[in-house]
Length: 438
Image (cartoon, rainbow, N blue to C red; front, side, top):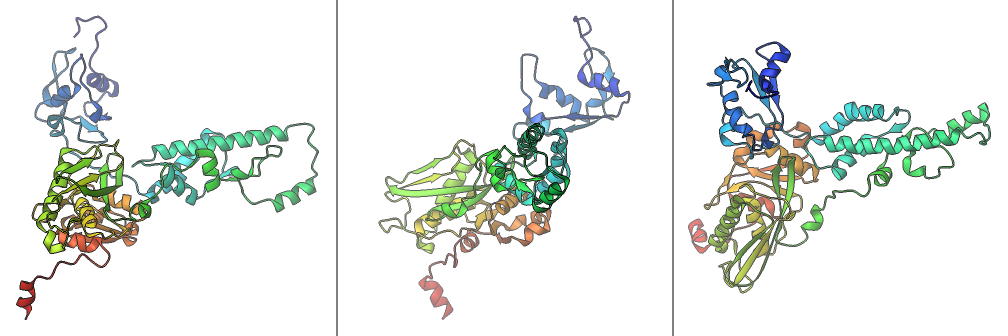
């Protein structure tokens, strides 16, 4: 209020005063990180500002008169909508912006990030070469993100290492006691050693490094250290009871392993891996559906019982236990994992899946299909099982990515199991079915 010492108009009125128009664009960055404090709740204050039915008479306490904000365009950004208050989210039109593909990240790096880092570190393209295959190695082995912020930092670290080598080489060349090299000898030397030299080959600081310095995989290991992320798909699927699911996170899509084991017990189901309530319900749905269809698929316990919880405890684990997981899209993965456990058969190592399930064995559509498919493509998987009603979402995926993948559109869990196992997952032929065919 004006009666307070040092008082001034609010940020919105100040912004309007700065631009001098009544129809500017306001950017509300990271609106999902609003937090209450002793000064009040900013989310509650934004309700009036963003509501088109009310913002034509917005009142700033400093001016104490109504001001029309109906011509102002507010753009808010957020990493996730889960933490935005529902009342505030209801006043926004949500536009989902998917993460970059690997090809897009490579183009962004070579068109924008690498030239920017070279300029910041005083380097030229004649001093350093970063091939596209090296950039791809940084993206897949050293970063896990939907954007390119971490990629930019990694490229900066590489440029700093090269700048040090260049400075050390210039320092050695500037020493007066170094023997002079004739012009003809210099030309012969350049002709013979014109090939780019890797930074890993420049450990001998007695001589300056040959230009340009080539950044290869050995140089990446020297500068950035061992790879932070490794693709371990085939190693994880070498025994029954493991399946690959697809998950969506604010950082993009991720592959998610589901592991199951059974032991003698009292018929209890144990779930670990920081699961939310919705995912826990999906696990209970999966085991209930398998128990009701155990005879059809000839699934038995170690004692031969078709009741899968008869004197048997089941433990389902979702690795990366420090990460909270929730949502219904892991339903088909849990069913496939348990079917593998009780049948003793291995799930195909190149298959990933996503989809919500019902108690009647239907597969329902889920969200984040584009990010999930890109995650499977990054992991080197070849076949993806998605709900049949998500077929329309495949149009958002680049044609080059779609050509390298095979999609299975499943409407029921029977179709999921037939696609997940090599040779299918055959039902037991009952006597009634045989008689009906004769």
